[in-house]
Image 1 (cartoon, rainbow over the protein chains, first blue to last red):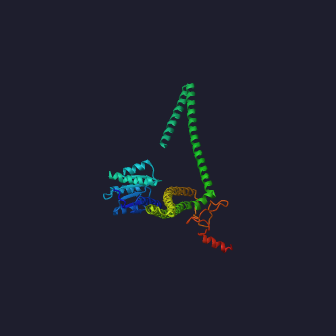
Image 2 (cartoon, rainbow over the protein chains, first blue to last red; image 1 turned 90 degrees about the horizontal axis):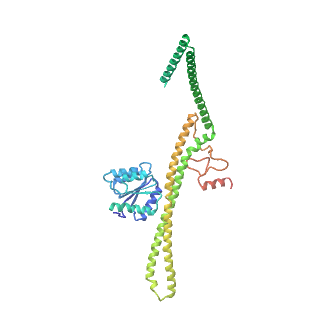
Image 3 (cartoon, rainbow over the protein chains, first blue to last red; image 1 turned 30 degrees about the horizontal axis):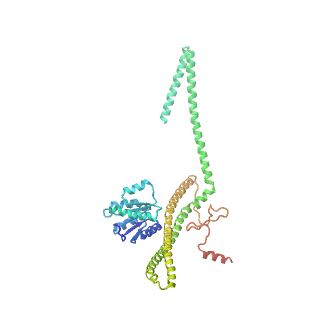
Length: 129
Length: 263
C-alpha cells in the first residue's frame, strides 16, 4: 500500500538529480526521504532496514543500479522491496535486464513530473493487485 | 614454411638434374630434337627459379622502403612542436577542465534549486491564504447588502483574490518547469564524464606513440604558455588546478591590482 509516510531511499551519484527527485516526491506528498550517492553506500542502508521504497539510478561508479537491484532481490529480507529505476540508460537490452532482475518500474531520463508520478503510482498499483 | 621451401627447391633441383640428364642422354643417342626439348625445358625451369628469387627480393626491398617511410612520418609527426605542447600542457588539463565544467553546473543547479524551493513554498502559502480569504470573504462581507461603498470594494477584493489564486498557480507551474529543466545538469554531466574518459585514452595512446620515437614528455608548470593561445584570443576561464600563467581569483584582486598600478 502506498502510505504517504513511507520511507524512500533515493540513490544517484549526481546530487542535483537526488534533490530534484526528492522535490518531486515531496510534491506528491512523500516527505520521508533519505539519499545515497552510490549502490555501494545504498546497500548497507537498505540492509539496516526501515526503507520501504527504493528509487535508483543505473550508472554509478562504485556499484551500478542494476547490481544494487540484484543484491536487493538476492537478499531474503529485502527481496520484495519495490524498486523504481530512474536512469538515462535507454538500451533495449538494459531495460530487459532490469525487468528480468525484478525491477518494478523504469523511468528514462529526461522525464516529466507527470511521468514520475505515473510510474510511482504504477509500482504500488501493481503490487496491490 | 622453411621446410616447404627446401622441399620445393629439392623438387626443382631434382627436376633440373633430371632434365640435364635427359639432355645428355638424348645428345648421346643422337636424338637431337628431344635433346633440344629437354634443353628448353631446363632453361625455362631455371629462369622461373630466378624470377621467383627476384620477386622475393623485390618484396623485401618494398617492405624495407615502407618501414623507412613510416619511421620518417612518425618522426616528422613528433618533431611538430604543437604535439609537444599538446602533450605537456593541454592534454593533462583537458580532464581537469571537463571536471570543472561538471562542478560549475552542479553548483549553479543547486543555487537554482534553492531559489525554486524557497519560491515554491511562498507561492504555496499565498495560494492557500488567498483561497481561504476568498471563502471567508464570500461568506461575510458580500452578504452585507446595506453598504454600497463597501460593496464596490468587496467586488474589487473578490476579483483580486481570484487573480492571486490563478496567477499563483501559474507561478507554481513555472517553478515546476524550472525544477525539471535542472535535470539537464545530470545528463550533460554524464556525457562529459564519458568524453573525459575518451580524452584520457587518447592521451595515453599519444604518450605511447611519442615514447616509441624516444621523445621525452615533460609536464610543464604554470610558467609555460598553453598551445591554444593564438593571436589575442585569451586563455579562457581559470580552471582550478589547471591554471595558465598568473591569474587573479576575485574581483577584489582585480581592483587591488589596478589600484596598485595607479588606476
